[in-house]
Length: 201
Length: 318
View 1 (cartoon, each protein chain N blue to C red):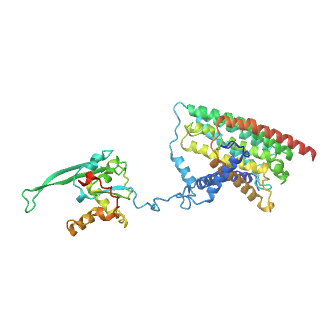
View 2: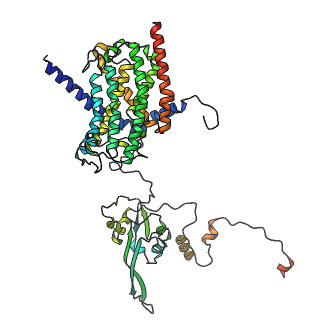
View 3: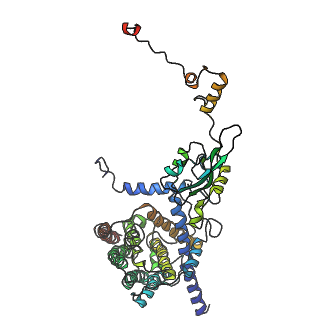
């Protein structure tokens, strides 16, 4: 009995099943011979997280947002004497930046939240270890992954110019010049409201 | 040729068939099942498409520890795999490959085959009871119910073809076979094949070893070589059921150039039927226990009884 209540030829379902398996037998298999043949991954695959140490300001946003608490950061402050400044400036120096990949769930929140592009996804995935403790990558190991980060996607030619470019252009043009917000899209001409006596007075 | 040499050659040939054919069919099952599921199956063992996978499995099984549970009935537990394997060895002895090409021609070959196949129930019950394991016992009781039930349509279907041929000798049945028997004996052939599948507990009739509910049924406690014997028995079972169906219903060695190539025809038919057995396993889900018994008692037994009536009617008309 089929779903709509009509009776089929008895045994048709059994024959259909046989036909499905026989058809699959003649088709090409979908098996990927992984260790012999590298998989064809999409360019933005989430394999492992890379750290660009010089971008990191030790703001701790990534460590705080991490749902698994698997990012460990230690730092100290250093005084930097800036010539011409009244006082020496303070700067954060990174001592430890570890990500424990045995805890990481690859949500990517740390990368999303980083305001200075210090963390990046890379498509490398072959870092399995025989000891679970070795999955704790320190900042040197995370820094090595930077070599495998794919270049960022090209800028959308129809989109707004990046904030940095717009700011640079505005500074170069001097005060009062067109801003990115003004040039990005044609200004919408709004119908002016009818002048009222109160408005005029 | 002296008698001892003749005997030696026959025994050696049967042993070779007993060891080689199940391996070939097991490998075919690996590959066919894989491709029917869109996979490629074993690819590494033996370098070329994993042809040596079952040899590697055998080596692995030999290396494993032979565990006997503490509460098990040791003698019975250890004997059961041999009891499961031995009947099939005897059956292979009587199956004719070509005209005159049979290890032991018996006038009551069919009778012997059916009697010996029944020993399978004993092996199942032995392993189930001796394991001292609830899952094993449940599987064994299911197996016994299934094997006893399906014995009846199996014997009735075989009886029909024996009546048609007027002999119980397997080579005699093949000689008496004519192509139009394919239609005359078709219901019996179907019943025999399905009941045979149930006798060797192949999916969709693998309720006794249903691995998702009974761990592995009566084989749960077996390890190493004894477990390998059970697996070997399953694959020899495929060979035996395919060979018996070939000999009884598909005309054995009959085919073009049967005087020279008769053995090849028998082997081809056995291979084709084995493929169908694998195909059915890949396609159908396991039958529930009540569906299994219903199929046996309400469909197969009546059909085989009707076939007996039909055989008698046609036979008396001729």
